[in-house]
Amino acid sequence: MASNDLGLPETSRRALQEITERGRRAAHWLESERGYRRIYMGGAPTAGLGSPKSDIDIFVVLDSRAPASSEQLAFEGARVDIEYLELTSLRRLVDTCTTFRSTAEDLEQIGYATRSRLDSLTRFLLGEIVVDEDGALGALLDRLADRCEEYQRLLVARHATDVENIGDDVTGALLNGDLPGAEYQSREALYRAAEAYLAGRGDYYLNTKWLWAKWARTAGSGLGDGPDAVVGAILRDPHLPSPGDAVHRNLWLAQDLLAMATTGYRYRPVPTAHPAHCRRQPTDSLLRTSDSYLVTQQTASQAASQAVALSGPGVLLWGVAHGRTEREALRLVQAQLAEDGVSVPLDEISGYYRLLRDHRLIT
Image (cartoon, rainbow, N blue to C red):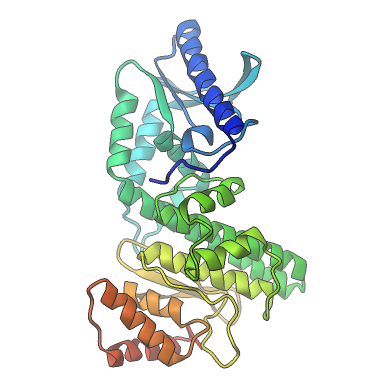
């Protein structure tokens, strides 16, 4: 899990502590006044994020059908947001999302795991149980915490699917000649890919507005020539001068972040590729399933797509190749694999490189 150290001013730290303490008191007030038996807090403050203006988020878990709408009430001069959940629904969500089973032929689980559902489940994982009279919440939280590795894969896959969908919007904007729209959407793709990268490193909280705070605490800002420094500078200033166009730069960086998030390998991405060096197709997208790594390509008609299955080391090569000569890419991949105790001859890596070119995954 991610560290909660954000380097906040002491006044902000005290304010967040007061918010969480007030949330506990509000939960106990709901227990005594309304008889609720299961209550937990969730949201930015319980995930180690937030500001002095953060709200208190209270989740009430009921046996019977939950009310259709949420509720707001004033408590000790602050706003309290109350969400109602049904125990069977929460249990189903935990059971469905704690075994990553999506395959190249069946992506139903990723479709079920919408961003809103995963947001709810992540708030539970990173939250604090305040009232749990029958122990049901504690049991569910233990199950979720015990299977974080599986849940992490699903989170990364969800972010990757979002990147693919946003990439389609980028393509549509470019076809319309809408360059400002394409640039905006390409930044959205990069932000979702950054969330995937952070989730792959154990920082799960879903909310783009906290992306930069999460990046600072998990990736850091003083990591020299590494991937975090390269991407972090662009996240902090998306309008940094670029020898190429920002749209393709953002999409290529999104591909790099997804490659590192899905495989666990880390390498230094090249934001802008020299024309003489290898390039990935900027609109290709990467999705890991339980049995493969799929790189999806748009067809010439833009009306359909096709997917190419790669191995984990193949994804590493696909990622590292961008912006580098073939010789540089092969040697970097060989060195990366050797660090992980895997010895692969250069001619074998070269054969995979040719395969990527044959499928036009790199040019």
